[in-house]
Length: 435
View 1 (cartoon, rainbow, N blue to C red):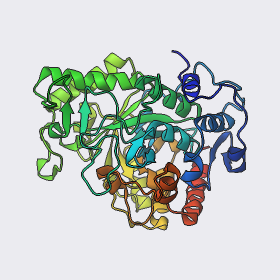
View 2 (view 1 turned 90 degrees about the vertical axis):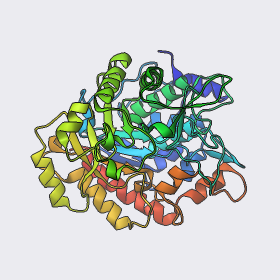
View 3 (view 1 turned 180 degrees about the vertical axis):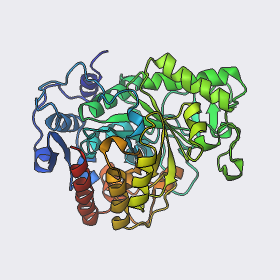
């Protein structure tokens, strides 16, 4: 595979010769050979160039070797094919941290690269996995920021390439190459990667050349084939995890609590789809994480899922530890702990968040027994008080006061109290990474 990172640098007007990064060395947090940037505000990273972000990641890479040019071959961190069963999944809303230029939103993949140095790398015993909130175009207003109108990440368009919020448009680099560059940079930092998808039929449109978009239909074989192939293309760029919205209700299960819109795939149909994504991509290590797909463990294990959210309360350390003991022999599937989820409305105290992270990272007898966990961007980088994870999933506001990206980034997150919180979260991860 070609060196996508060097292509990204060249297409950004940069040369490919790298040097150690001063800002990174000033904010470095180390736990053995594992290093990242902590005690920092996101705006301090997001306002940097792509080259500075690449140099930052090379400066703190685990191999202890500084690369003066980005390597041609970067392997995913190796935790075996069942890595997803114990991973920490950290969802980054790449649309929210994209560049806001006036009313336009763009280059979210570059912002995702720039935030990577501040994500703690994987531990000795388990992986940390970044999940990107948006890949596909959203149905309403893709490419624009709108603070008070429906502009939901939960409504996607297939057969239309990738979101204008995310992909760099002013480049010769194909979308898949941009994702490959992101994945290579995450991998050199010791992270796994994944993305969110939706399966509620009325929340998916199929783009048709010179025709009106079609509403997705799970009973249409062409639509099913499109769904599979769109996801296979992304896995081939280096992603290894797919977070499936509304997965609990696949096959008509517990529909009284279903809040999505439209039909869901049948149980056997979803088994086939997940099998085919694995088979066609040639990636045996894919982790499929299902929203609230917990409770009936056999149902979800047999479906092909690796983990699910929201079964165990993260506020009770002893309860989490008890469940890790009960489930320690099942290495195929385990339910996970939520620090917070995509429906989080905000208002949780810093202390409560830190306590939940503590339960996620330490509530077990042995590290090999650890349960998976799910976090949001806000659990590492607190958002300003008048927004929330859920608001940023449903709408796409710009908080810029002067129409520039920097102003948006400075105002999206909390200020000095957020810096202090970020350092405290880093301490927790630091204790855990060498277990």
